[in-house]
Image (cartoon, rainbow, N blue to C red; front, side, top):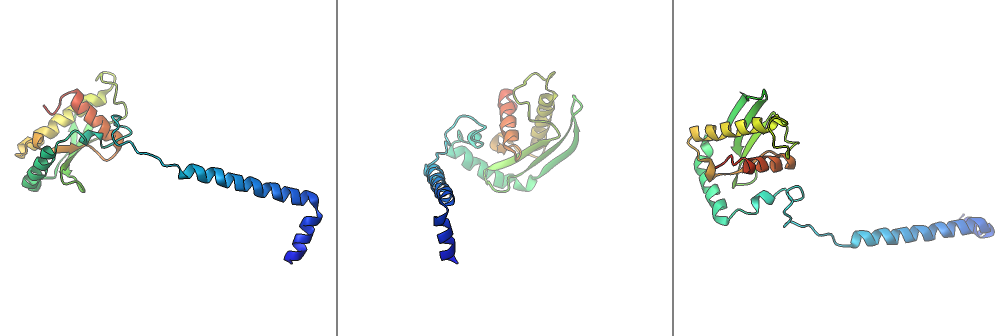
Length: 181
């Protein structure tokens, strides 16, 4: 059967040419695409852009600060979680506040403020972006709840939310409005 197929292929010059060209083109495509995947890609973890490096917020921490946060969290872990539902803000946004032990990182404490949008991070005018005012009020309330439980927030390292854009925006707003000072 193979002999019969080969004899037909060599008998028809057009079919032989088409098959030969197709094999050569496929071979060239294979060489070109495999060359691309073999080139090494680098991951720039030293980037200052918080969007490209979601852990940039933690790069300026000293080893001492991290160790202190781990020790302090062990002392206060029985006082967490702290949860508050239906916190009414002055701009009409209802928030939920959750302060918990970070599930995988021993130096971090999760502080989640939900119910608002973190998407418009750069609009810092509370009249144009009421989420900023809601965040400020929710953050101040979270700090108050921690202190009422006998926890000093400055001893902790906070991680805000699970999504990168939430962490980036929350860190930006905390720093911009000096909410932890």
